[in-house]
View 1 (cartoon, rainbow, N blue to C red):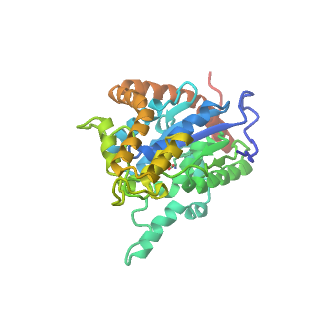
View 2 (view 1 turned 120 degrees about the vertical axis):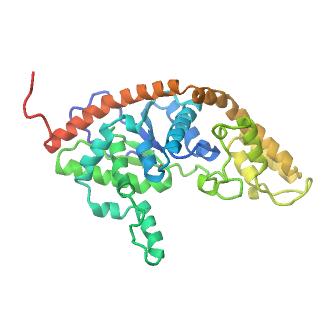
View 3 (view 1 turned 60 degrees about the horizontal axis):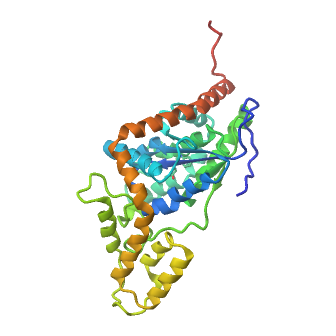
Length: 362
Ligand code: TRP
């Protein structure tokens, strides 16, 4: 990982500021599925466990309300995502783990950054442009129909998330790289215009991370309704373990019979298996495909493999979901830690732009 961004944090920054500060946000829409676990949660938790860097992970609920206008869904998603990350081993003592909306300095900073960010920069954002393109394909539809200021200004809020904590490394999916570049741009403009208060962040993208295949053979994604739940749906009638088993049994296969040799590289079962098994186990499963393992048996082996890894986390997840007070306490502790930074950074920023007390009162 290369950090090519000069650290431009101000002279007042504490001497203990480490060279590497990782920060990432999770938008609070949806309930985590197996693809999220393999692609984001597991690697993020593993990467900070063996590193001496500082880490900030947060629930981006103010980003959540851009896409989702269902209050109950936002609330439930926030709870489920917090419980998932903690159950999967995120240590809230080691990582500053907080909810974006508990740090009011972030939207304040976003407003300040809005005031020096060029509108033209936002016009070029992929997410916004994609929405305009969809409107333009229709006749008699305004190009900006259905597009809110929240969607338009999304990258500025994201820049505030990052710049507030002077993050150096921001792990994201490919679709977010442009947003990190915009954060650098926004930081550079502010630093140049007022005072060099903000570190230019670098995106960290894991090229090796496989995208998990879903039940229907396409990429596993909530928008295709082809996901395998990580811990089960909310308020389930059947146990989470049974739900996972049921979903795995629904993975689409071809109509080859048991004993026919099968091509592992053409199978979603094998593809998902690879994300959970050791190299020896993978080689063994490959041999079993060649030897004609039946689809039902292959699915059962996949379930056993995933369940062995996930079952210990599931118990903790269910405990946290049943005890939101514990979750809330952890998030409040995280917010307190985050605000120790954000209060100072916002104060410096306000002073830099000329907003400060007129006189000292006793
Ligand atoms: N936009 C990111 C996503 O959809 C989530 C996010 C919000 C984020 N703020 C962030 C990611 C700051 C990294 C840093 O995935």
